Amino acid sequence: MSKIPLVKPDKSRHEYVVGIDFGHGETSAAYCKLEWDKDAGQRESAVSDIEFAGSLRVLPSAISITLDGREHIGSDAFRLDSMTSNTKTRVCFKQCPEDIKGEPEQLMIAYMRAVYAKILEKTDKLKKGNHIVYIARPSGWKDDEVKDLYKRMAIAADIPLGGLTSESRAAIFYAMNKDEFRKNISRGGIVFDLGSSTLDFTYLTLDDPSSIIDDGEPCGASLIEQTIFEQLLLKDDRFSDFLKKISCM
Image 1 (cartoon, rainbow, N blue to C red):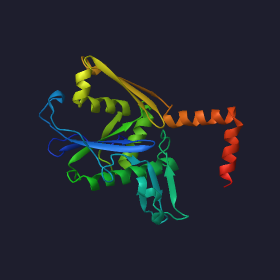
Image 2: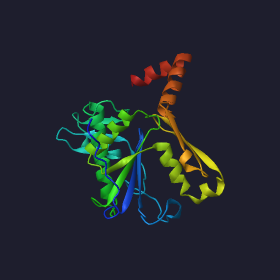
Image 3: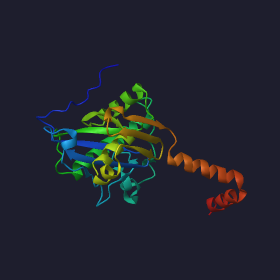
Image 4: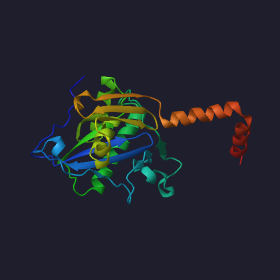
């Protein structure tokens, strides 16, 4: 397999770093000015969340693609004026990648490309070539081939990718920039990220950040909710009868 062309951090070009979490249910992103001459503990630049629509800092992970190739993401994917009987609309399409030429992977690439374009549109400070992007991935995606495939998908979406980080690891380092976290955590902390499709966690001791532990399982909130729903249907016929009635309305 050919080497993955990741973007190397370059002090002469890159002013900002961008982080993106393409979630199963929602997508979020943030950016921060790079302070090349300061150690991690001395940095002063605040992390700024990307506001996708108004003050909304999350984007529903949804995409619709018309026959002529026009793409609409987030809430716009459900706009009546952009939807026709031939429009392909998808939600909750993120999955562990298997084949970059597969339909789910191609759909994800289209979504990645559209989200990145939206980030550039909404953030005046970010220009082509002046930033580098890191993407969060489920901690449970441990296989190197899976991680490499996800990198290739992001690059195919024209994202200037510097690399991947686990979702819960990104969360704990984001929390460490908050005064409240440092004030209440004297020795270390653990973050549990119960996402829509996966459960991830990261444990970090402040005395030795190199001892960080990441892990995860494919047991997200949507799977738990679906299981509870199925159990209710099995245990009480009234739920099944109710569903039959409303499906006929």
